[in-house]
Length: 377
Image (tube, rainbow, N blue to C red):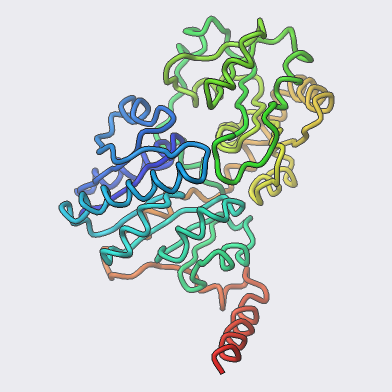
């Protein structure tokens, strides 16, 4: 079976690398497509994954996003018509589900950001099997076009899949002149994302001066962000792709204004603080409620929490790892669904109309079906 995987964002390389390796082990042919964006090709090369570069990111404007996405759909269509895959898999790709739908290719999609409404409306209506963290309210995804009979909630989060084959590399901190357990990692806000509506100034600009005695490895997302942090003497900003998982593993703490690296940190058992300034994801709220993460946009509170976490480092790490060990890994779920499709031509989706986790979802669906009939009459 030929499986097409579309990778459109840097973290998705880590999410899909295990799927790619396991499929190749069992004799499947894997077609990987990507786009020009955020060092994607460098990370794919580092992981030894073959790929086609198709299209580019459209930047921060609506006009740029629309044109780039339209161009990419056209180019993807030509490639996929020629390659003829049997199954398409993606994570928050706006183009792959529509191309696959148009060519009648079965699809598995993973979504973990319910706040990316515009993007989700381009994805969910065309996704045959939707896998998502159960922390997300299914109503949110239904409103954005998901099919209640094609949804598979998991008790976990996407970054658990990033640890496939992971072995911490002690050389990574050393290459940056750092000692293991003696530095903090930071990540700036996702200013180019269509769901981000926060301020241009990063919260981290006010947090760093409160932690002057600790080396900080910071990952900016844009050249403009890089310039804003160059004035800090204790900040290191890597110039090339780096093994960020090893860096997080050996870090004393992670402070991030985004999502992915925060959750990777938690998956690794590293204490984590979120400083995202906008609407929090359901997954973030869930992790905060379980005590696996702290969230604040107040620099003083962030600095105080950082000091406390660094003091409790060993015991807190043990707590995080103990809780995380009981979660469901999306890698395993995706591989089981692919196996099910290969054997029977169907997926093992849980019908939310009968699922115990769905609450009154069946009534919600029935009610809206009734309203649709009233409109028709």
